[in-house]
Length: 304
Image 1 (cartoon, helix red, strand yellow):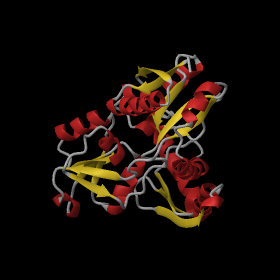
Image 2 (image 1 turned 30 degrees about the horizontal axis):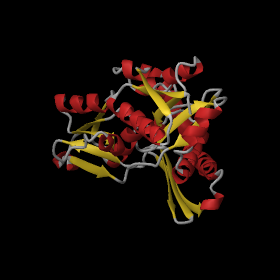
Image 3 (image 1 turned 90 degrees about the vertical axis):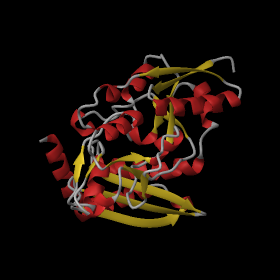
Image 4 (image 1 turned 135 degrees about the horizontal axis):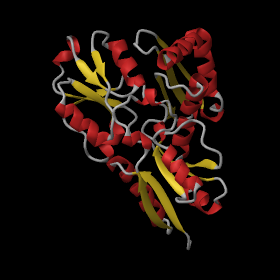
C-alpha cells in the first residue's frame, strides 16, 4: 500500500466533507491519501441557470480532465451531478451508503403556501414539481454551493428555497425552519456519493471497491438508467427513486413539463434479483405514453 491515492474534489464545503469522508474511510483501511481540491466551471458561473450553460457534467468535467491528465487518481462526486455516461477511461469505483433522499424547503414562514409566493431553485425538476403543486407561485433561479444559496435566500425577499436534505445534514447547516418535501420525487441518485477511478488503475479501483454499498449501487443504477433512456443527453425535469424493501424493489419515475402542468409518472415493483433493465422499461413506457412528445417540446423550449 505504498502508493498515495490522490483524491480530487470540488472545493465547496459540502464537496470537501464528502471527499474527507472517503479519505477517512480509505485511511482506516490502511491506504495513504492526499486531497486535491479544484474549482469547477459550474461553481465559477453562478449567474446562468445550469440548463442554459448547455454542458452535461458541468460540476464533474474539471475533475475528469484532472484524472485524464493523471493529476488525481480518484474523484468524489454527489452522484446526482454526474452524467449517466462517464468519459472514456473513467469508471464507477464505488457508491457509498445513501443519505436522506428528500428535498426540503427552507422557508421564512409557511403562510404563503395557501396564497401567492416566490420560492427559489436552480433545478428544472424542483421548479416543475413545485409549480405542479403550487401553480400560482413564482420560481426564481438560484445557483451556487449550499452556503451561497442559503445566503442568497437570506438576502432576497423570497418566501423559501429548495435544497437537498442530504447536503445540509452532512455539513450541519439544516435550519429549524424547513419543510420536508416528501411528495417531491428526488433527482436520480440524490443523496448518494460516487467515487470514480481510472479504468486502468487496478490499485485504486481495488481500494475504493471496498467502500461500495451494494443496495445503494443497485438503486441508483435503476434511477440513472431511467434518466439516461428518457433524456438522451438533454436536461429535463425528471425524478426517480428506487428503494429496497427486503427482496423487493419499489420504483417511481416521472417526467414533468417545464411549467409543471404535465406530469407523467409510473410506479412499479419487482424482485430484487430481477432489477436489471427495469429503469429502462419504465422510461420506455413513459416515452410511449406521451413522454416522447413532451421531451421534444422540452428540448425545443430549452434550445430556443
